[in-house]
Length: 496
Image (cartoon, rainbow, N blue to C red; front, side, top):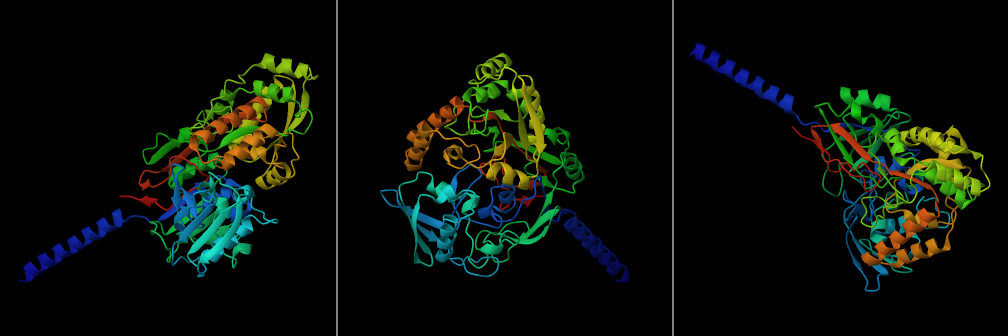
């Protein structure tokens, strides 16, 4: 009996060890280190134009009445449903009940009114204030019901309410969201180590479907030379917006998955249309003819960008292929400069923000323009400088930037926008677009708008920024495409 007991005990011990080993070996992780190229200037999506803000916070910490899905579709979010009046001017939103902000305060209709009134106020600092321009009144029907009346029908209103700039904030915390964001999302803010990382943790009291991850650290890695070893070593497990020019170094790693998708990022050589000599159409056309898009794509996006000739994503059904309007033609560019009274060209500045597409692309653009007599002084800038000097003060000649906001062709109609461009015919078309819900007519108006921008050579259209995602092969739930500027982690999880 003693021997039998010993054998049984040994077998039980071996079984226990085996079970323990199996559990340890195949335990599913719930943490994630995710790489991002740029550090946000602050953490309030309703008070800044930088895409890096939404890349950390959209759908994770902050939510809106609606949200944009992975295919660009409009989905319910804090509003579980809505009705629209026959004249298209009155929207009644029914809100989810039991929703709380991360500081424990309740979310209800008063927060919707506060958020929308704040965004459209005269002193609003919202970077996309025009999203709310059609709103006439916001009324609280009851704590779970909001009535929004528009000045006129707006075909894109539900879509606009899904932007990061339209997320809901609370009056108790709105003033401090830049440093300590308080939202209603499935993750709450834990820590920001400036220059290093931003950490989010799972909210224990989230109103919606629970997320799989308990903790996410957004690791700030601006240098592609550092991003590659971070991914190869496993120190960083996902990099959803990986630098395109460096991805070739990762494609053969069997532990990594590489996905190449599309974005809404129209990458342009922006020009100050009121600054001489760029106020001359022939000069802007000369610059457009001087650009060799394919060479820029090869050097600035690892060959993965898609050439564009207008401010519209090629993935849009309203996209008009105008890449043939200004083919690379050095002789034509020189001829136009001569007609503009500058046969020897001119000097100008090219102010470049930090992303590789801008810095690498800038070197190539400067070389191409030099071939036609235009001498560019390259001025590298950090984002804060660029936003202040170029975007806000319009103190620039040329710059390269990717506009990643969705369906934003209307920016060319804004009176004080940094392009300094005004065309009454274009503005009229955009105004009609804002009043139109019929999809066929909207497509017609968008095609006309694209043609006007190309004819006026407002900017040099370069390429659509590719979305190159790299992550551990055991991760799933990341978006392949980027219809908005976001790293939505609500469905991301580790698998065995």
